[in-house]
Length: 435
Ligand SMILES: Cc1cc2nc3c(=O)[nH]c(=O)nc-3n(C[C@H](O)[C@H](O)[C@H](O)COP(=O)(O)OP(=O)(O)OC[C@H]3O[C@@H](n4cnc5c(N)ncnc54)[C@H](O)[C@@H]3O)c2cc1C
Image (tube, rainbow, N blue to C red):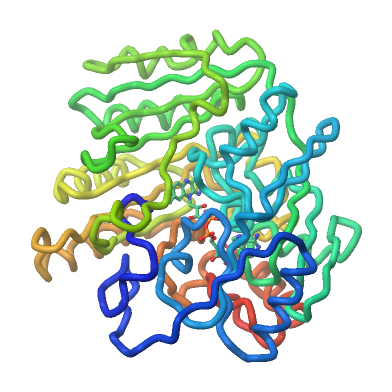
């Protein structure tokens, strides 16, 4: 939800997102834009020697990229090269997903990423990555076959399922805790066809959500749907309730028939197209300088859920109605996402069928203390039965909740990996795994 954020330099002493920044004088950040892994290694050694905080920035959409910080800021944007070799794709640690989709298109290839072109490969992948094709091909991280990592000791390490396997396991969901990834190696998919549908939801949002739930119980894995209801706040994000559907695979013209039960609901308007994959990725650049609006807070909760029952559906719809400046997202899972055994990656809850995120936007003057408290309680009730929280949509530092982003056994394993590769916790400006 970067479109409501300001960049770091001018937010000192103000509420930033849900991070409270106090007004003490903060020494200026030293910004480095390395062009090679060895330069990254030199900067990491320098941060370790000086004992100063290190902020790692890829696409810049995560909370730490925006919060004011002293110490060293490592911006990876110069490391954005993309090499395609058959179906193997090597992506620089600072690339964004729109660049990847554009580079893959001439080869008839694609990777399951998120839904936004301007989001970084780094942050999205290391947290997991739920996107338009999650049911067809799994998470972004499920396509990762190797990585080059610069560790806290400044070593440049190659990792795969066979080489430093625990590190490779931890990178797939454990965030930026273990080192700076200077290169991601993915196995891409041939994309025989793609179709995209937008269904403008009529008056009865709950009926749409219930119908989507039923449809997705045994839908083909080529089909992934996302429900989204947002207020008018960004020209790139149309307002109102809508369900977007992607068909990724052969016979994209099957999308219309697959969605027939949803299209038949009263008041629903359906538009189907067969765009290029790159064109369905949204553009939401990180606002900079004068473009940046004042940053409000978010009262948010998310969860990976086994199912959507009618009560939960009712609560989501009521939340959106009660808080006019609020957003709700629901993304279908299952399919290839569920094929991956839980212990194969650090990402939790492979038995989740839906991801749900709700957030009331705390625009100054709109909410009083009672309504803020109610929004927080309602949001928590919606995700109360969650299997786990998804780290990539936790837009604030909340160290006490990091364990809840993982299965218990995975969190213990992540701590072991952290102790091995970053015992001094140099990489701590992230959802920090306790050493
Ligand atoms: C508009 C928008 C749309 C989104 N859509 C989706 C979506 O469809 N699916 C989804 O799953 N998520 C989505 N997200 C959430 C997104 O995955 C997270 O915000 C993610 O952290 C953004 O990654 P980034 O590289 O852009 O951000 P950054 O702020 O650059 O990175 C976030 C953190 O990741 C770590 N990091 C980043 N790159 C590296 C690296 N190369 N090596 C080591 N550590 C690194 C650092 O700890 C950093 O603080 C969306 C977010 C926004 C704002």
